[in-house]
Image 1 (cartoon, rainbow, N blue to C red):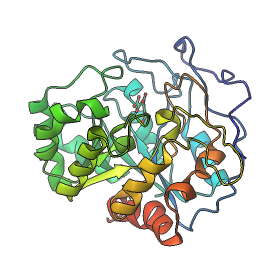
Image 2: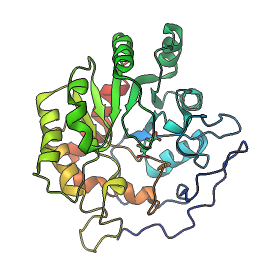
Image 3: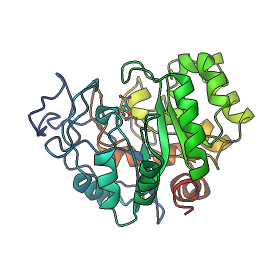
Length: 317
Ligand code: 0GY
């Protein structure tokens, strides 16, 4: 049965003279070995590295200071959980300095791809160098507590520049903001990948207007994909299962299952390690993996979610 993390959640360091944000929860030491056996070649398609701060200082404009989380620690987790590859997404605490993420890619022996954050001042040579290191996308963030917004004309200019590289755009936003962002998102010229299903409020009905709008977004726009990740961020019922076949984070299950089943060729899954900004509990990553068969209920859906889709998007060249 899934349990919450009862181990200390503040036992990690932040090097380089930085001080963790008060109340910061550190990533989990000694995660469980998942009971669910991942298909061969599975990709953890949403995770981050933080610092370490003494080597890759956190950005002055950051909204939080995390504990360090290195590529060595990420790749150890990958191997422990049974993943083959990672997609490392630039975290906002590093702003548009992608060097920690790119350093991780260069040390991954081809087993990691990246998603960067760039400004309009990025040069073509810098984009080419990132491509050579394994970057395949840029992330546009619309979550107010994480970033000061970049003007939409600048983002559109960036999208036009990365499109010829075959890259895509990852978008992070809250469900309530989708109506206002709709025109911008639907004008993007690339594949568009939504983080965490557009952060639905899972205490609202699954057939209510908010989640219906998200489904319409995916139905009407075949270039839109979704990560069905982060039940630990979305859940109000939390990690404790009720027993039997009940899942942890059970209130998220119908939302994620709906997206997996209707858009099986356009979904991705990731751990979100090292789980920035969680306030309530730090998930055991092994138990997060055990959530997967509750939302992708057949071997065929699991193969698409964990292997075929991320390989098509990130390892096509
Ligand atoms: C996530 C979620 C969060 C943070 C970031 O880059 C980030 O700082 O993505 C969040 O706080 O919701 O996907 O890691």
